[in-house]
Image 1 (cartoon, one colour):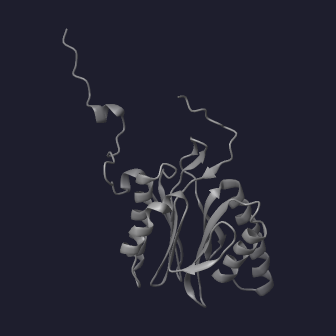
Image 2 (cartoon, one colour; image 1 turned 45 degrees about the horizontal axis):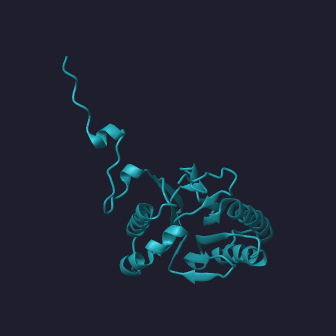
Image 3 (cartoon, helix red, strand yellow; image 1 turned 60 degrees about the horizontal axis):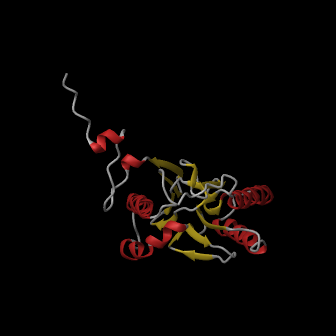
Length: 233
């Protein structure tokens, strides 16, 4: 049976987003697939959005809803920073996200993870799922790919990880979700936030670990099937 593509369907980031604390800061990670129904509208989107110099947010759900929440929070935090004369804390940023999500819970379809570092409490991760609840956690996962990751994180996450261990965990987890979740895909982006500032990293598909029954990346279908033998005349 033919499956009709609705190109007017809302853009959705059926996605995988992750935030992890480590000894000194936080690591945020996400895949890059944005879909419209069964059509991949953008295979290299950036789902980790800057709110302030020291706070970022991972976005899942409706692309439009998550973008407008991020834009409003960025605006309010800019005003807050001017009034106070110092950067907003991670908790303030997360509570602004929570306030907008909760007050508009009947209109919004987005789940967010807020992560950042401040001089008062160091690295912090806050999950703000559908409905506007706010939960501070040592790690948070969200999006359609998160269903495949709860057991993995129970086994792999540990207290007091180094920066490299935390980023390796995030990269491995997103690649695992990409392998299992049809709505997650593309590349892996990470953002590391600590007292030294912000570092963004980009990992294309050929730099990600392969999981069960995944094919290695190839430039051509002929590489997989085997090039045909030359014809004899």
